[in-house]
Image 1 (tube, one colour):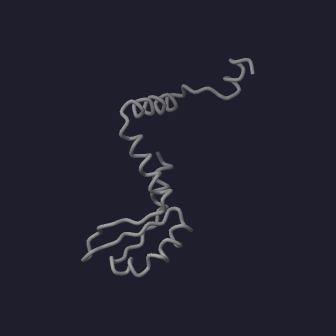
Image 2 (spheres, helix red, strand yellow):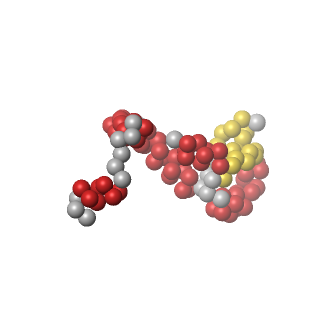
Image 3 (tube, helix red, strand yellow):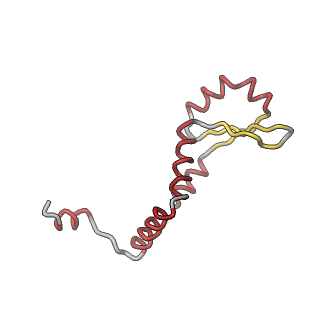
Length: 101
């Protein structure tokens, strides 16, 4: 969970008006392609109306939402986290020995 928090803290967000975004669109494409965690908040009359971000960041967010929306997968994840917290883990050496590797 802390990895997600760290990633969120690393995301940078620049804010600009629709007019400024239109004028800088080509430059924004170059800027955002260099920094996978950069986003641009586009505002109209001071209110956020649009977010521009690298495609990889968009895909990552969409995949995360898909996982969070899967109740069965989330139940399995919670069970796994609890097992780790309770110390119910196996080392890779234990697994190799068990399987005769």
